Image (tube, rainbow, N blue to C red; front, side, top):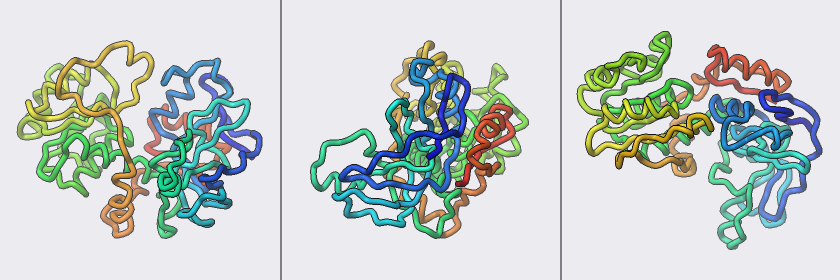
Length: 336
């Protein structure tokens, strides 16, 4: 079997690894059909600058954005079937660290419903993202659903509703997804995207933003407030920057919520975020938005393929990271 392995900090390769373990009682073995790079988390983990990752953890498995087909079932599985297409397979192997391990030819998912019904003790691979995707959705598109589900659940958790004024800081896949879903599924009244690359304005507007704000300008919070037609109801913060967070708080209404969504690198975490009661939750529960995102994909209200800029083979994983680092890619999907 092959998997993406971080051999040393800064180097991820597609190579041979041991065969996957047999599925446990509530687990299913999944043959991966597609996976993608998370532009923030996977890249920072590869570089050992997130979640305390270091050379001591190498070699380790990478990846949390994957989809695959169930090929074998543990004896206590009741709600998964062979042939089901399931999101977020994970993998841990002896001799390797694991940051989820979804970038592999095989992985494991949990039959969460059976697990919960039987009161089985929670294990490391029981995840709310282990959900079945209809066969009508292509594997490459299904991978993108992971990001979209996370983002939609987070938008709702910070109070984005129809008619809201939303500020999104950052315009990577998550920031663009926040603008896109707030426009297409929630019906926000005004959306401004703020970032440091004005050349991204056209893309941001195409994903639903009404305005693009350059955060390099000293007066950018005032410009954002003007573009929104008033204080923001909510801020979706994807950069992890304490300075950007401070500026965004100046745009936020007194009763609004700023969601610090970004996985902050170890360097960013050294500078604390401003203390403010309007700072909201830091996590997501994509299980809450699964059905809505799947339905919106099937009926054409949203198109996950819009986010895919490159489709590569797994052995091209180095190129995938390079494309992201050079800002030439939005989402890179690897099809097996």
